[in-house]
Image (cartoon, rainbow, N blue to C red; front, side, top):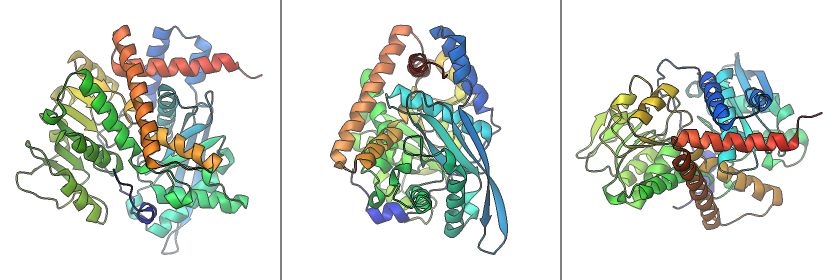
Length: 440
């Protein structure tokens, strides 16, 4: 897949994700319950379980911003470092009105498992600002980002904690963060973040990495189920950076993308959507949305209709807790590949498992982004950059190896793939804690 022009990466508007959220369960509570489950199965030392049940460091900050009209608004910001047992902490920064400390704690822990399950020498972190970015101008977003960066800078560092883009942040956000740290420290510190624009030390292939990784593991599970790609129907919830790249890649592999959606609505054609035309439409939209798209044979659907569409593969690529106890029974796909973080609740997990639906969990399926973030970080540290073909080969190797490890473990232990992935990840982190010991 062709790399976007460098300037476009730096200047493209953020693809805002404002999906209306249903009543949410506490994600941190779910993560802790999951940890307790796998800890019993692994017979982990209770002391290690207590360590993993608590974040190493939590920082809450106030972020005052001078708005364009001269008034001052103050936003809540967070950065949580869950574990550094396996290496520096790594995790994205999100801007969303629903950001709170429990969500950030949970996502930081999931980043710990994600990095471990794909074998990266990182621990997990996450950050966010409680803000509706659609209500801020570009200059206000810049001021917000720079002030937030300064506020959390005491716990950041290329060998300590390396942020990246997440919901409603992008390469431009990372450029502001890197520039802010460089100005404060009086030297270039571009390796402080990943997901940067190419001219500032970003990696080729990073923008596409998460969606490409989702497509890779989708192909792997279809191969193991002896499914023909050309007859495989796919629905993708979310058409932002991850969902659109997954759609483009799977379309190129021969799959039929029959349903997609973004915050403007959903689109369905049982005979397959024209993915290149939809990508072109979104690229020309001022907010990179599918709003206003139409084509012969395409009908508009809502979010619940997409989740229950008659397809073989469902890829939730929007926000968390989209597949829940109240709608899991309506899912018709036999395979779910989680491109978003935490899109399925524990209650829904049980329902899907009982129905025999294969679910490739988020900590494996969407790990392509952090995998190439790791490659970007390595390139920055050594000031030596690789061709995109080499990046993609390495990404493919990481994702296929990790998928095989989880799939084989699930087969041997007779457990769902999520359980297998978390068991493998937690065991790797526990091994690191045991080997290092508890200081002092």
